Image 1 (spheres, rainbow, N blue to C red):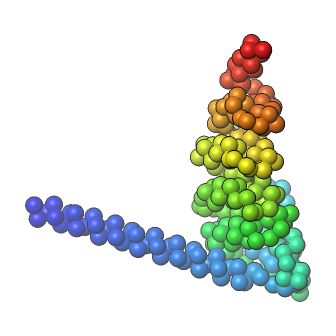
Image 2: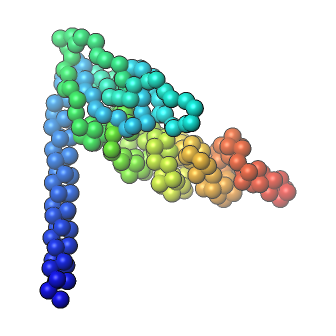
Length: 262
């Protein structure tokens, strides 16, 4: 009995320690992101920063590729880091440029180089910033956040896609990259975005497109449901268009079913 009690106490102790470590890690990440936001804010000029990318991300300095493993081909592009340039004018962010690989040119007097930063802090900073700038710039901040190594951004992309207070372009970018990065985990969230009552139709169409991009046909089933039953004919038409592009047998069966019912 004493051994069992000791084991139970040990398990509770390890669980408590794990909770403390998780809280410390979360707090540390928030502090890092806050510090990064302070360091990256300038009135006029450019801010450079770099961070580690996911293993499948590579580039040649300008073009960015997501490499999938194959049996007979290996990419020669560089696997990171991500290199980001933020351009500020009058303390307003006016431009974002993202690179992977390559190297920086010598910095001019108007450049603040923050060096390499933790990927989690970079992603958190970029997504927070995307919420607080105009859509044309905000949408350019979403993509580099998805490149950060070891960071699960898809829950925040879902929240951004649902937030009707955000600029449309920012929401559409969040939804697009949700479909590209989260795979099967995003399917339910994307379906909910399409069904969201009163949602912007352009945003709903972006969610339909994102479903069509889910790998291995993971978005086909919700697209079939949307094509059959969505209240908006425009959304149904969009779902059928992307189903036709998929060449999935389930899509062919749906078209046959619809033709027979006429």
